[in-house]
Amino acid sequence: MNASELLQQAKGVLDANWRGTHTIPAPGLYPHQWSWDSGFIAIGLSHYHQERAQKELLTLFEAQWGNGFLPHIVFNPEERSYFPDPSYWNCKGLCPQTPQEYLTSGLTQPPVHALAAWYIYRNARDKSGAVSFLKEIFPRLTDLHRYLFSKRDPEGCGLASIYHPWESGQDNLPCWDEPLSRVMPVDLPSYRRVDVERVGSQEERPSDEDYDRYIHIVEVLKSARYDDEAAYPIMPFLIKDLCMNTILHLSTRSLYEMARLLNRDTREIEGWLEKLREGLLERLWDPEDGLFYSYDLRRPGHIRKRTISSLIPLSTGVLEKTDARRLLEWLNHSNFCGDCNCKYPFVPSSGVEEPDFQSVTYWRGPVWINMNWLIIKGLIEYDMIEKCEEIKQSLFQLAEESGFREYYDPFTGDGHGAGDFSWSAALIIDLLMSDGVK
Image 1 (cartoon, rainbow, N blue to C red):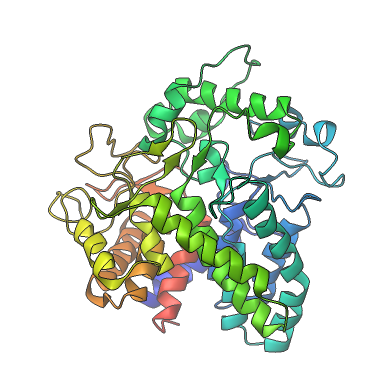
Image 2: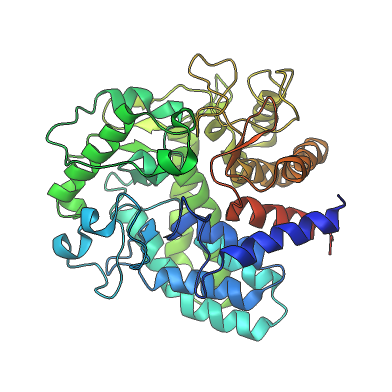
């Protein structure tokens, strides 16, 4: 298969998953609109379907809450087989901030949306239409960022906190094992997992024990009626997460560029960027290890697990070049894409030498295209072109041989999780079309 054929296959996945106003992540397993999925999907669409890319984000932001919060799921009311479903979240019944015309979850996800909106403008053929789009979405994006920098950072350190592993987007990353071990589920509602049934293998998904903890954390949040001032002091899981704050930095930088283009006051955004840079370097960077680590607020300190999250802040550009090259050394280490018997030099979600590594279990070892895409962006940031090309070509080969899957076994390259996965297709489109493939 040549690059143009791969590109057409990727576009075909997005076409098949389009639902008229938005794109679902994958048929069967993910029948609703997911927040950060739509952001990555819009990045891919921005190269060839501007109108659809704009619609993707605008549809998502129609379900934004009154306080700026953006839910991680916007439900299709005709699809009732997914759990947790709207009746479980009960957002309308508990929180007056929710939009009454939409059914949503009560958690959020990494805010890739401003980055996606800026991609749409940069790649737009209709620049005047793109500017009109930015004018419409800019205040909504600003409200989301203001929510994250205030309600999710009452300490004022510049970093947003997450309440739940699902808010990191990396549900069962080994980083969460110790914080979750302190969550003691009690009085859980009865529920039936749909994810295991639809994937067909318990091995590929989070454990039942972890799922009980996930549901307990949501129950705590519901007890606070989704009110951050009430929830923040009582949430048993409270983390300054690397993925959330890496993507928050990238999107805040894009929001700043939008503000300049639209002649908006940039002072508030500049303040966010400066505090976020300080937070990443002072709270999450470990100069001795040459790695970033998430920070646990409930048992204060770094969560010292070597996962792909430790590497993705390379994309923010906050490190000096000497420190960035120290981080690059980890990419050549056997824990990641060095001499570790992985099929190609891509980066697995967890270090392969870590005791809790599992090659086909969701975020405990498989390769995810979106995380490798962030690392590629970081390598470009520091002109590390050779390693960038190695990983990029590996992702192309992975998609060609195993299709656009949710995640992949790093040793065999076999695809796992959902098939025809939208963000895998979208980000391959971005990498191919950025290289000039048509």
